[in-house]
Length: 310
Image 1 (cartoon, helix red, strand yellow):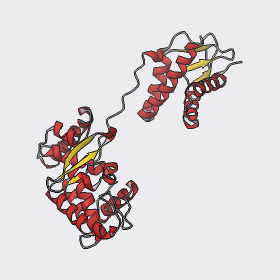
Image 2 (cartoon, rainbow, N blue to C red; image 1 turned 180 degrees about the horizontal axis):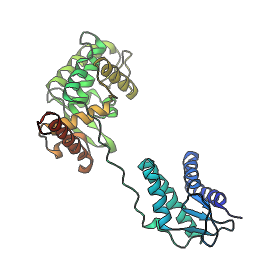
Image 3 (cartoon, one colour; image 1 turned 90 degrees about the vertical axis):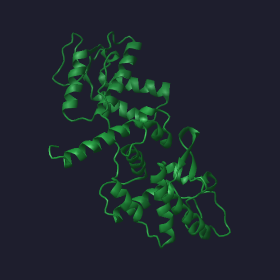
């Protein structure tokens, strides 16, 4: 007897032995396939249950392209997320390849099936006015406020990732040239300009509270805690959310949202896409091009809001 559950179990055991996948991944495969496999007679007749792979008790397997298209079309219309459908198709494609390898399936419609495309997710950005409110939120008369003002100014002025910010070392900052040397993804170095405001805030922090907090201790990190330790990414996230709330900015505000704002505002003011690519440290221009969609969407919204025939 080799019904759906038996074959799915055999498949799960097989990919565990071959690839050593985690328990969580295996359970995801099992759950997806259990919802796609149904009992079906060897002659092709099936019960009323919906499915795309019909497996008889004797192990005969039937699958048709129309079943696959209808079922996933129904799920898509029912509101299932595209990412979930893509994952289910991926699980089913691998299951069918396994069935073919063991001679249990002759035709495989999944070979030519194109999964639905993931809709473009435009990054959230802050307006220029919101950025100004955020940068002004830390108290300029408090040591921690000076540090956090410098931190926010550097993030927005140079488009750094939060991981790049917390790993930034004093030796990588050129106050004379107004540049920072950043080690990004893949260990690739790039130079990022700071701008006058960010440079001024950074000098006030480094020559004032940072030096006093360290005392006789030493640290290579630019941004440290009052105990002299380099800040963590979680600490930066916490501080930014605190200041966003203080500034009355709605929605989730994160270090990456500041990075998105940096890129979008550059394009809004006429920067070349290649320049933005270099500043962000993207190896592929297509990664940077998403910001052109953000800028275009902002222009359309401004036109709709302010033009008399918008």
